[in-house]
Image (tube, rainbow, N blue to C red; front, top):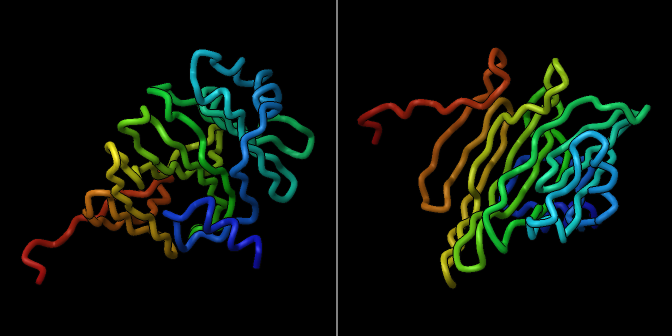
Length: 196
């Protein structure tokens, strides 16, 4: 039960997702661990001062750093898949949480939450990934789930269900996305006109 509570605290914008592992406490040694595959962390980016995130799920480990990106390592410490880092925007840049679990698909889903921007205006977003067939960690859905402007905060959400998700933006717009096996991504669904 404690694990479930910590999961909800780490990713409060994401529901219908059953994580097997979660990390929301940055550690500097993760950046050193990532360096052989992703290069050094950018010391000019404030996010680098927070370190990186690490989870172990089954026989593999997932490492993430804001500027270095995300790497999935197998039991032999070989790279299974990886994705590039993110652009630095301001003093609020940081990784918020990293998780791996099930979200209504037949493949594990890695969820990464991060904040980008400055103290006066920033946005928190979630990227969902799956391990691709050719060593890429492929983004399958990315969206802003919280926006801060001055003292105002607008919150959105992602609700995962079998084969799809419902996204509510911080502005209140809602859309439904279904997982397309051909492209390996979530695709938006058209909303029928004149629906009461």
